[in-house]
Amino acid sequence: MKDVLRTKSMSVKNNELYIGDYSCRYLKEKFRTPLYVYDETHIRYKLDIFKKYFVSDKFECKVVYASKAFFCPYLASIIDEYDMGMDSVSLGDLYMIKHSMFPMEEVVLHGNNKSEEELIYAINNNVGIIVCDSFNEIKKISSLGIDKKVHILLRVNPGIEAHTHEYIQTSLLS
Image (cartoon, rainbow, N blue to C red; front, side, top):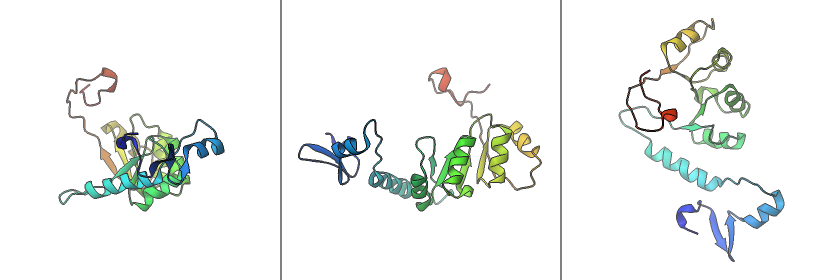
């Protein structure tokens, strides 16, 4: 097995793949397949890299984990332990993040066309930042009638064409 495909705690012993102290054969027999196995040692290794290199003397920087990649309460506790933020793109994400006991002030809500329900839930649960895609979204937040200070980040569309498939182009002017 090429080293680039190995996570930090993977090893081969007696021609058998191990993740940490557990052989893949044991994991398959105990939990059946299909099975997703996450290597906490490797996750922590990657988080250490982000914490080390995403710093600046000129700008305030915070690493924010995209919960849509994979989310579970235990991972949320690790992200919190590393003093990182959590990204959310839906009401379901917000609900799961809140109920994992992750600090809501470290959550960034973004995504286009946010519903009033999502915005109300985010504001009432003290989400740290709401990323607004337009001035209309700012007006929408203002019209909700919630008397709370809301931190927003305004997403600016620079109008740069990336020469990719039209469905994934994100910076074109409309």
